[in-house]
Image 1 (spheres, rainbow, N blue to C red):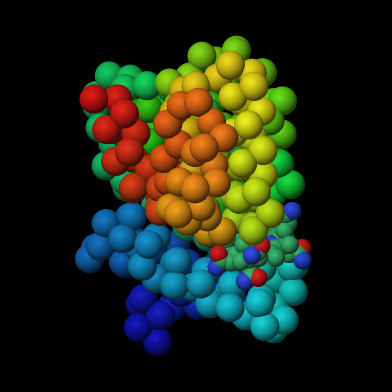
Image 2 (cartoon, rainbow, N blue to C red):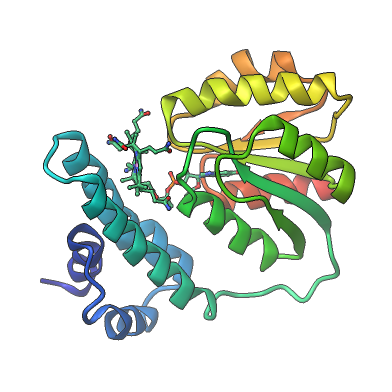
Length: 213
Ligand code: B1M
């Protein structure tokens, strides 16, 4: 197997044996984010496909998730960090009912390496908890992540609840089950402030930077 294929296969197989040396070897020809978005995400896409076909069980997918997390943790130290002053404070959460957090945590790493102060509320975060955190933290924006189809609908409810609580800071939304169209036609009309869709973590950073300019 080529180095790229081996990296994808650690994720698919859910094994860390040899992972770090191969990540280090890959770092000689690619930057951390390209390693994540390239071979590691390719592995995750394959895990999703196998899971969908009932060829993997949840326990196996969890091991794949562990490999992805370990890889991102290892690569983080090699990411470029901007020295800039704090550009803004952002609350991040995976919405109520959803435990998927790898994408959200990647967004946290990218944003915090680029001058944002992040308050990460974790997974399965109900609107009430977001509203409470908003009053406590006074963020410049709120980021919501969700991967399940029902999470897209949960974002609509979350936007409504936040609007009813008088919140109007920009909301950044992302995650596999979401689309730009759903964001525009279903979530945005239910909220007072801006609702912006990010297709990946770098897109999230671009949007945050535009907001803070
Ligand atoms: Co789950 N799962 N899972 N899972 N899982 C999916 C999402 C699924 C598509 C797999 C499949 O069937 N093909 C499917 C969803 C079906 C649907 O609703 N349409 C699914 C299912 C069904 C489930 C369970 C219901 C399974 C079960 O129990 N029977 C269950 C749900 C539990 C719950 O949430 N209540 C479940 C559980 C799990 C595990 C716990 C085993 C594990 C998660 C571990 C963890 O996160 N700690 C898991 C995993 C790993 C996956 C897949 C395989 C991979 C997800 C992932 O981490 N991708 C996934 C299939 C797939 O996506 N290929 C699947 C890597 C990550 C970096 O990408 O999160 O998409 P992602 O983030 C991207 C962008 O989306 C974006 O940026 C990132 C890239 O830069 N982004 C944002 C995300 N959030 C953002 C926020 C932003 C901006 C950008 O701003 C705020």
